[in-house]
Length: 423
Ligand SMILES: [Zn+2]
Image (cartoon, rainbow, N blue to C red; front, side, top):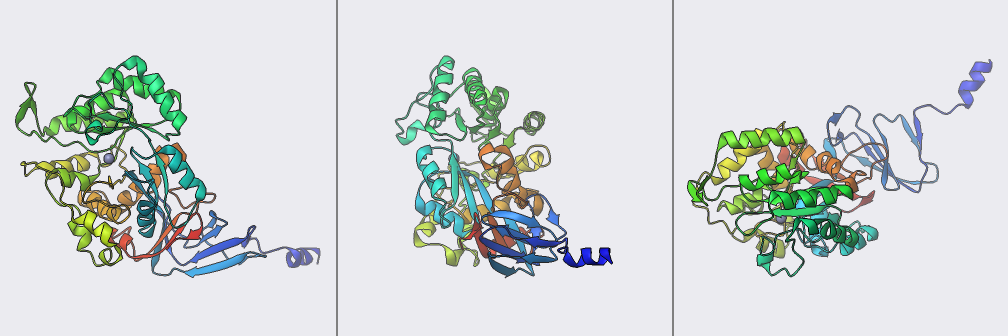
């Protein structure tokens, strides 16, 4: 009898009690948690964070406002992270991004860290979040200066510590290094001094590279990641007496070294298409799921021709071959290099995912590259990139199953940023 009374008075053990003001309950969705597809199809968001994941027998909303989303036939994913952008401090870039499910951008240089911090603090659901490197580290006359940038450059290794300290004081979330041998560039000693100064301040270092030789210098210097895959523009020619070009055995050695050091790569396949003389924006303009949602301004960006003058018809094939060598060995992060001709904020990340799959990644591996992988490498983003209890509720709901068909990321139903509906 006493036992019976106990059962009557006790709440159902699986009934979830909401503590908060606003809750969103996604029911029946396939859930990709940033790493795997989960068995249970329910996710509960409370006041901007994920409060429960898995089977929920019942929800006791208490005094909270509860929205129920019937997501049968749909897939819920973490909001996408574009790991390589420029111009993320512009409101229109961040609005373009969030409309296509990109809830966070990693600005690889040029945007004011103070402005990016202001944008994050505003937490506007109509704009993606962004972290950035701020001003990059390049040699006097090096890549970056040809665009008329008048910012400081690094001439001596002994100045690296002060240079990095100044970037950290400005609010840089990580350090962007430029090793690009088509112009005067930082050598390994100077690059290592930058890496040591950054790591001493708990900042990751990501390097721009142009050729495989640049990538070898960056990796030897101890960088955490490469902002691009390399291309060898001068295929078959000599540079300073040394042959420059595709060398599969040398790429394989570099890939193994990157794997040993756990150095990630952001391939930026679209912008390398452009560098190889192809037009990366065409495929997006031809997609009926993406094209109708693009503004005239974005369409102009996508129509712009790349700068590629590469006469080597294998240029892009070698880029794709490098990605397939890296698969499973080197952590791969998805990034567009939006801000360049032919590539835009938001829509272009969906094309990048498709190209990663063309290069040999499974759809799940490509989705990890745009969710949990970037979140794992950038300490400022450890609150996101996953659907797990306690994570920030940046979410993308799409029709169909992108874990089987990567093109399904484009069938966007809803986007939530920090628990608030953005699209
Ligand atoms: Zn870039």
